[in-house]
Image (tube, rainbow, N blue to C red):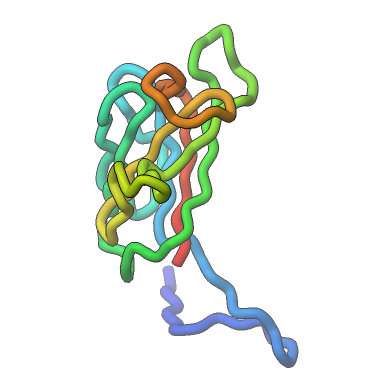
Length: 133
């Protein structure tokens, strides 16, 4: 198998967009003993309590200024539909919580659209995250 290494990948047309790739991604089960199904550049998931996890990167990202895209579903066998949100575990209004770092990202999974409280954090069977920089 061959390996191609480049610093920048751009569309071939004039003024083409630069392509950015995920630096890390993970699909994991967050119920009971947390288990990674598949990943890229993730060494482990830390279970911080109900609905609270930390994704630990195998190789550090450039800095903490990355973008996270995530989704979650199924916090019980009976509930397999919507209303689940994945948020950074950092409250930017109050400054409380855990800020993202180049080596890890803490996140909370909640049900509904209200503010994060202990009552609406949920362990979920399906959590999927990607991190781009």
